[in-house]
Image 1 (cartoon, helix red, strand yellow):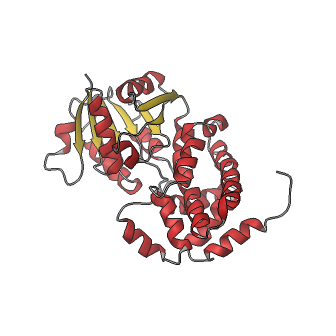
Image 2: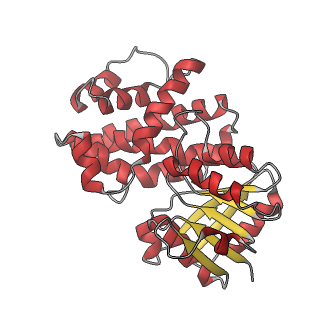
Image 3: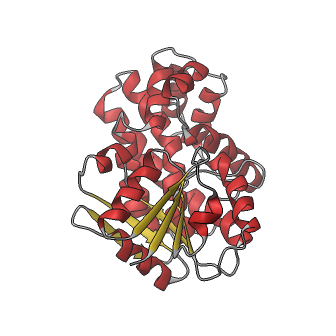
Length: 303
């Protein structure tokens, strides 16, 4: 059976460790607070899963570079975010650091609390190396966790990353009690915005209609289990961003992603009206009510 090493002891890392163990893999779960060193769990690993936060990716990459990771080891990234300095995605950072290793993105509508409860879910394993994606598929597929494969890792990753921005907007919508009609309109406009960004960055449009795009968007924008949804909900209830993040006691990647996305959109001339209002809200430029009003007052045009 394969040896699986999970880097990151958060909720998602722990859930992935449990899922891997159920299929019989030998699983090592490592975090910065672990009593054993990283080298001991990397040596001999067939698959290394990076489940660290976006801000921890760089340091984790540096640690593994120092350990001379075997080129036969598959690196799986489940981090959802954009690097503020380079605007790169996690998989791009990993591939740049380890050009001889196969990089697989694992992303989908996967709320970790539901998976820890044993509730059914599905996800996507995406890689330019389809054989590596299928190996990850075999490791994780079970009667409660279905894994599909594709060859668009960037699109798969961006779906999971960008939906966090829209989850903040969805939380605002529900926090202001604007109703189902308004939220449906918001999510319907969020999807083409996600596709517009993804295609400009080199992804396939069709990827965003699947589990890692629309599927993850629906899950994250409709559940209080989503930290990003709770950010928007809290802002709508008059809480400060600092207060909300302190209450969450964990990372809401959508906050950083929004800031980096707007930088990218400005550089590339990409139209991102929903994301831009989320950016203005997070940076204290407008109130939640004004954010919604600004979206409703946009220039009339065909759908």
